[in-house]
Image 1 (tube, rainbow, N blue to C red):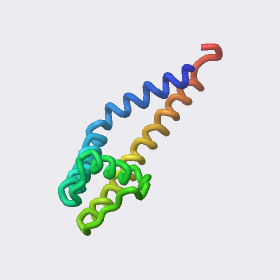
Image 2: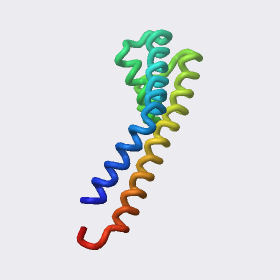
Image 3: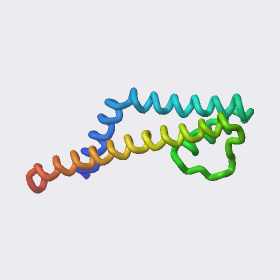
Length: 110
């Protein structure tokens, strides 16, 4: 249980530290949603859904961009999503490493 709490502590501190970067990436995803909304004429909710599904590279295929500008936007959102996911995964690896290192230095039974 101590390792899990240590992981959560390191992960949350890391999130607080990199929050400006994550906020910028989220704003870029929302900007992509705005492009889908304005150019494709999709309702805002659908546009946000499409932007996030594209950014996290799920891409169900239920909605596809039809115009060249929105296709380029989808490609850029995919790249932003890969960066976003990579940052989160690297933070989780860091937090896991720190949690395991701190657990290894504790005396037995603590």
